Image (tube, rainbow, N blue to C red; front, side, top):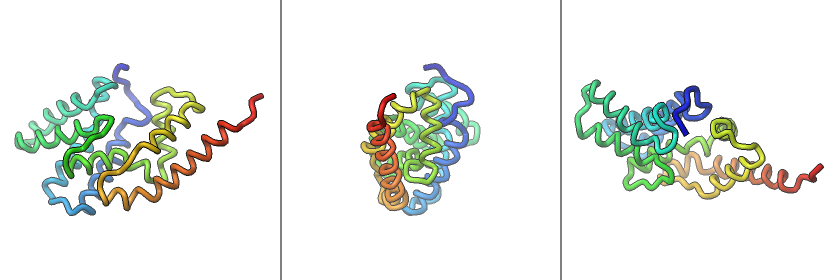
Length: 180
């Protein structure tokens, strides 16, 4: 897919949501202030590559962040950290350290919030997925997903389990609905 303007899901709202989640998780995980700043910057830029390319966009997001952070005077080491964190959000997520775990959890934090259905529908629209098929895609994703940090497990886990039960009920109703 090519880059798309005005994406319903991967947009500024999502970037701010992820950055706010990253901030909260960093505070709960007692991450030092400078590292917290880098995680939040990575969260803001983690999907910026969508303006260049839809699939495998993270390397482009890292380049965009690199250019912007260089102009803002960040060190090479800080830019490398932000780039590494952006790349860590690639699916499937396989974080290698605590900061990567935090940004991955922040990126998926909407799964464990009351806004999960809103964000799920925005992603469905972005992918132009059929509503009936989307319920199963959403259900399978929610079942396979897990949070990495204790903070995210505690903060988002209970609501995510509730959201998963709602999606399971919807999928069950759809499968058992009589055909006309």
